[in-house]
Image 1: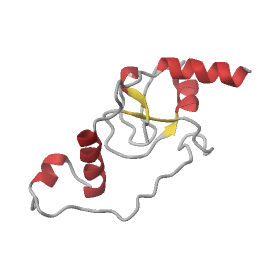
Image 2 (image 1 turned 120 degrees about the vertical axis):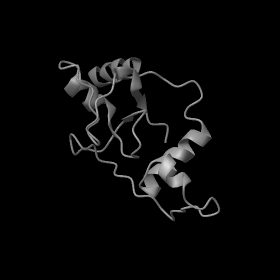
Image 3 (image 1 turned 60 degrees about the vertical axis):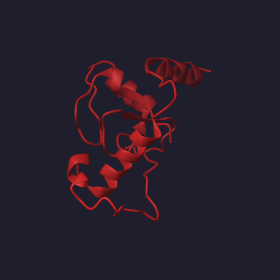
Length: 118
């Protein structure tokens, strides 16, 4: 099947993390997203107070194609929680070799592209 072959090619391009994202790193990333600031900004607040979200809304549609995400991808340094369809992203950007996050519009190297573990 052509789709399966293309899917395997995309997955082979994306580095896989050995143990996934560490829990503390994931927690810090979520706090930065929910808190709206950097970790340093949030460190100035009372350490006893934590922001707790009852629910987090995550869009399952790719910002580039508008279709439902099949394989969620993101760049590791990004602080937002949004993802994009990895196959569509690689297909659209492999010729230009510009690896720009379609959500925050920051440029990263291909080595920073990961499959979102959530």
